[in-house]
Amino acid sequence: MAVDNMPKRGYVEKLLQIYCSSQEFCIDLIEKIDEELSSHATVIAQMKGNKVLFRIIGFEPDVQRTLIQLKQLINLIQSKQRLKPSKGVSAAELAKLARRSVPLDVLAKVLQIRGIPAKAKTNIIYADTDLDTLIQAAQSLGEALDEVSSIPLGYSLKKFVIGAIALTGLKPAMVLRKAEELGLINEKGELVEDWDKALEKFIEFLGEESEDLEEF
Image (cartoon, rainbow, N blue to C red):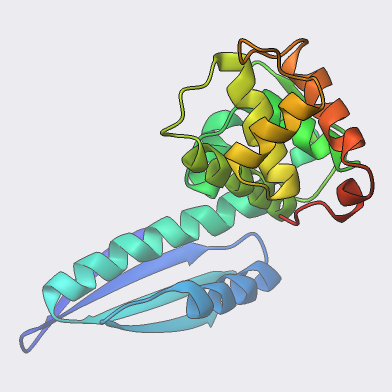
């Protein structure tokens, strides 16, 4: 990745050159950037062999912001091409792609309940699925974390609740009430067994509702 600057009558022109693993990736890169990059500066892409030259033209603040956005987007696209969930994705890599951190053990359990082989080891998750599905599942779990952020829940109970929310789309209060009705939570507001086993039973107990689980 190379950057060059060229002043032009009050405008700034910066050049960013990217080397691709193949021409197909170059084309895919240009298409994704065209779809996802939002900028006030003008961005012109020129492909030559296995290289793409981006020309960014405009007022300097706009060009600087666009250059930063462009680099971040390119890094994201390159990471998505390189990473394979079946070979393991680290918590840090997934957090960067999903734009938030989630507990990998809960993520693995959510995927398992959805029929996707998955396991978490320390700070790495392995899953027999594509990267986009893994990212979407992490984002769904992240949204569940947001929903319970103001609710005082114990460590294990929080894992159970966010997993249930991600799988069913139910609100936290409904998950807790249903879990109490099913005998998964005692009168002290504690899970009566491990959170992962409780989550399996919760989904099973929902019966027909569990056949229409929340889509990622």
